[in-house]
Amino acid sequence: MTVTTPAKLVLAVSYQARGKLCFIQGAYQPALADLDAALKQLPQLFTVHFYRGLTLLALGRCPEGAAELHLPELKPLQTPAGAQFQAFLAAHRNAVAKAGCPAPTL
Image (cartoon, rainbow, N blue to C red; front, top):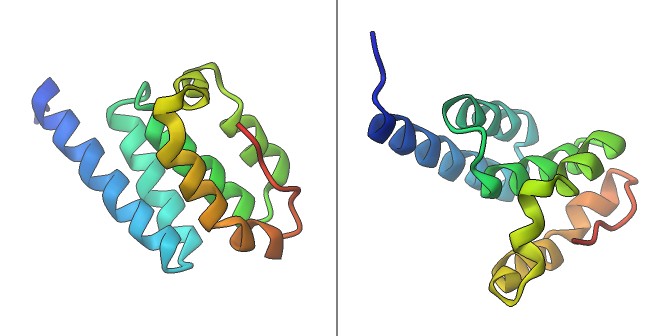
């Protein structure tokens, strides 16, 4: 079966949405699986890298999570438009702190 580019976008966004929901619910392994599936469809989708980084941190995979959050693809998050991601990061610091990882910054 061939997947077209528009279909890849729909799949990637769907996996991202479910991964983010799993993360918020504290289901980090399923979140990681969905975020990885999203990246298989569209590796350049920087929002998926952001949520994947947080998920890895919450799983206690601190070096991997920190590396994911500091990818060049995430540079747009350091602009004023990245405020929603900064807010999400602040809202979920406890999940990361429970895993023993240092608090991430973008």
